[in-house]
Image (cartoon, rainbow, N blue to C red; front, side, top):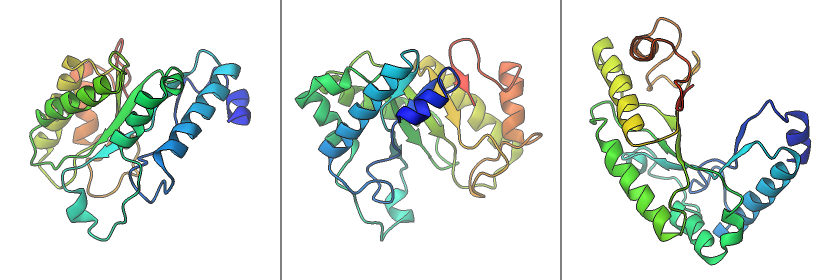
Length: 213
């Protein structure tokens, strides 16, 4: 982390430490070990680049996850375990500037479900003593394409509008390239999803205080 923070000081402006630790593909240790890793990385980055934002690892929220991965082994570190470390040891949480989550609903789901998801996450954060810490949506897309171009535009527009109303400072669509998995909305130039961003915001880059990348 010291090498990365030194090399990219002032270039990388935010670091999300770890990815979906509740998934055994990414993490097989304990919640305590993971919290220690986040705290160590945060302190290291902050000592080298105090302006950088430290983002706690994101939980994956997908309603159909068990159905899609019936044989997936479960890790011991879910979001409740991780936030529990914040209750037990508030010192590590002081080094975290934002919390995050990933959301992959089906294309048939109404974007309004995001309101319920955010309410649950913020209740968990309050219980952990982390109320007021910004919540970022660092991966979002809809599974179940193909759908009509109009449906794609509607999903993107309504999701961004709702995220803004819920005071999510950052929203990152996965993926802003032509390399996204085939079952997700595609954002290559000229796609309906990319057009929806441009049509709604006037451009496909961040608005004043919230980002769409």
